[in-house]
Length: 114
Image (cartoon, rainbow, N blue to C red; front, top):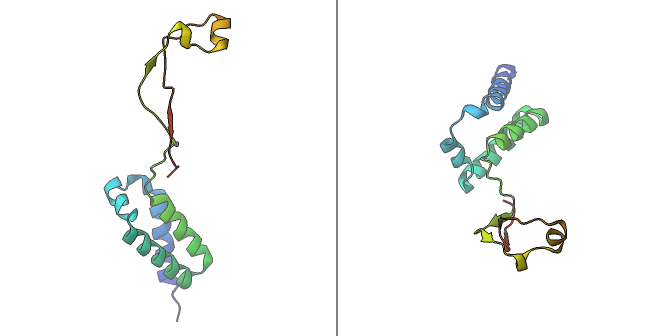
């Protein structure tokens, strides 16, 4: 039994999903970020890989990863601004005659990158 038509339909659907992924609303993408959404995505990737072979599986994985919502955090969070004074300047600032008005913060909160 030949499934060429179904494989072609899946291939075209995956390519279209990758190309037009920017037009999918973020509200729909948030469903993919839940535990159930990820579980369903893994099952779909495994089924398509089993049905269409490893090239279709790689294409499916790429489509799923492109559709995942991107919440990139740099890992640093700066809180309040703090004014500088003459006694609170760096050595190089005193030597070079620089007088900055304010610094971002003297405390940096390190967070894990998610």
